[in-house]
Length: 325
Image (cartoon, rainbow, N blue to C red):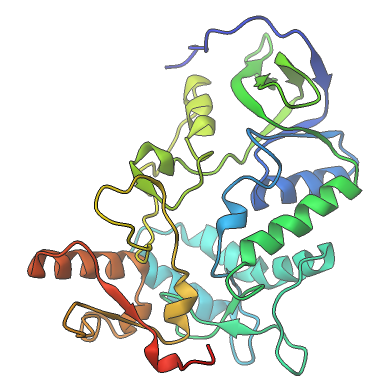
């Protein structure tokens, strides 16, 4: 696919920058803010509005070794076990080591995480974790709060942003080096039609491709444009099989399509049980963490149980939480 470009008119307008960040989720906006803080002229382009990506749909929280007695090494061990031999250990070690400070930076940016009565960050559990290490905001509105804080910070920093912009192709110079992107602004941005952002550095933070499936928890904008752009530019792409299917999605009936409502993993983290139509907890004996086993194990167990009983859904039982919940 190297050298293939989308058919489009020549750019009618252009912007010059040091860095262009494609995507406005937590990864893209964090990168853009760090680049701008380093004195680089930074442009953010996004296919919809700044806060329309996957970040604001993330419910459960952020895993980091913030609790008393927890350590990055323990977080590393849990992550490697959940990864079943497929993790890049060096990348995981970076994640768990730098995670606590990353959460603190988000707080410094303005994100308001839930706290205990003593003022500490409130922590819960999610799948694959042996300790409470999930920081959350607004209960199950963590992504929305992080997105709000980052978007506010980007606007306060007066970063140049181009919204409603579908990125078309990567630009390269005569030596084949990255030189920016072409994009099509779809009628509602500061620019209109096909344009270009010229920059020697391009960061692709375009999220996933869940919308290639008929039903997904991914938002409508997750259509894999960034991966397609990278492939056309000749980049090597790996791990395309890792499209996340969340184990607990609200069942809307057979044949439901498009973005489906997610039932936060924090519900299981607080003690909800997965049961079948007979009220049987089927995760007991499947894994030592039962309902909090890694997501792939939970998803497979749900599928096996549905096949066993010839049903198309399972249940989350939270009745023991009590009416006050």
